[in-house]
Figure 1 (cartoon, rainbow, N blue to C red):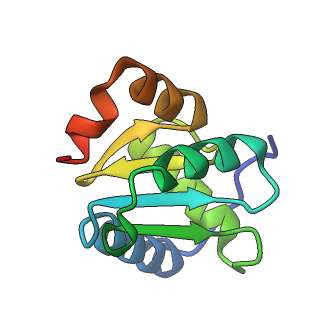
Figure 2: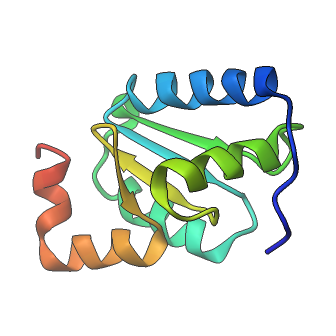
Amino acid sequence: MGATQSYSEEKMADVKKMIDAKINSKKVVVYSKTYCPFCKKAKDVLKQYNIPEDIEIIEIEDNPDCSAIQDYLCQITGARSVPRVFINGKCIGGGDETVALQKSGKLKGMLGL
């Protein structure tokens, strides 16, 4: 993983506002990169629950603020890597954690199903 970059306070405030609004607007929000196998794993698990109106997947690799997004995700979740999966505003982790929650049967309950 590369070193974090320095961003203006204004840029980070905009990124923070955008991410906070997203994770509080949907039941499930996934910050992802299209080519990442762990992101694919998390998205494949979530697709099994047929909740298209309650999920938003945000692919960040082409976003000019990609590094700032990952820096803020690190601040709020403790990890800069993707995927970062949020359910009801709370980060549950990444791909492996999403799969583990599904296998344990806990994911369905977290989704309110």
